[in-house]
Length: 336
Image: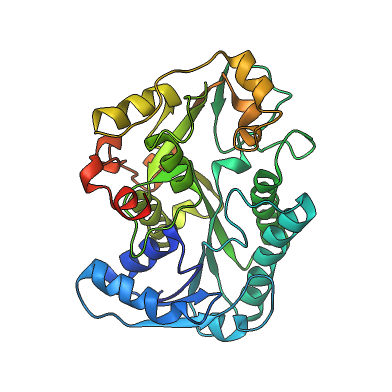
């Protein structure tokens, strides 16, 4: 299994997956939506690895059929990282949830047509941890959990992630010639490859590190290093024991006030005050940055990462090596 397609090659996770695959001597091709990114992505990977690389770049958009046949034909496996929109997208629910699901199914259907036997899908803990009907103040979450799609309080981005993964498993149930593993990272942080972008997890990081969010909400979140996320995609690809499994990734879970303290210890300017849960829940009705996580406010989240550790030998990079001192952090230097 040497010819691998990585969709979403310009993404934060996608670039790391490509770099690690090339470093392991895989033949890699990738997809980008914008033709102008073709040379940029290859240059970014070469600078990161410190050597010339061979990377076959195809132009393909998850919302269109064009380009996907050429991207998939001749591959041994697909690592499907791409998503149609980043976290924080402002479109309506139908405009977001539909493309997540439809885009994944476009890739899966063509994979079947071309005889692809193996797919690794990038999902998210967004698929497993949202359910406002659960009132536990301590919540243990493993791969058996699913976000409650009937919960009207859940935002469109989260529903889109869950619907995409559910659609993938439903497809595999009817088409068992393809073997699937899904990777469910928590909040992804760590060094990027190439020009930094302020979106997704990095948007959250910037909001805290520069005190753009004036308080640390009473929220507990898992954190995982982007290098580990890429590594576990490849570990799943190389290990048949991962077939049919959902794999949660989190170095650990942290209350935001403790996370902010760690940032400040490294020279950042993060908020230190954490307001009462009832107050933040009330404010979440008016603040779109908090509203998506309203069901999780005040909840002691604990992720079970045993499958990652036992099957894929996940040995997390410590959070201290994921967060950097202010003067070394590329995101802050270039996006401030």
